[in-house]
Length: 216
Image (cartoon, rainbow, N blue to C red):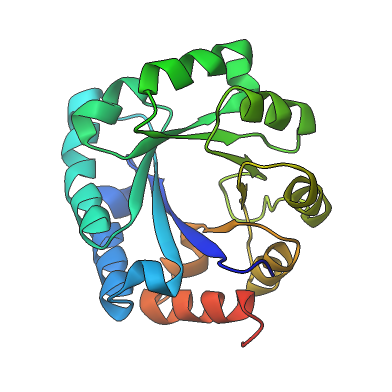
């Protein structure tokens, strides 16, 4: 496992019931209260998935979640909605770099240097290299849903050869979290199924952090 491993919490899509009825915010709050110095525990970022809400509803739904995350020291990223990054107050944007193609470089110019730009690359080395050259702050392998875990060999290759940090997405079990940490991921994403659906989200996150550290 790389020194300084960090964790990226992932929300359900913002149009999903847990985000609309307060369930996600309650679970996130429990996690952050249990880790009252979240960055010291390795919890450093929160990715809000976009869903299908219109702009007004998305901003309304996201606002208290963004506030909670940033108050705890997390960098909060918004998926895809580039036009809402400023209005939401988010710290950055996560997009599918494979889908963006050559347009990805324009996103870097649009966001400027003060916002984080993350590149989801699936299993594509080519997309990841292009995104890195275009100024991505991180590249991410795997999918955002639990069960679509990044290939540990791909994570290890990037960590050994490339400079931008690598995020490992899609782990569905503590064992996959541990494998991706061991492969050299800078960040391991914790999908909602890994912690939010537990009756004790704070304890679930603690277990995952321990698994990644080989202490479980």
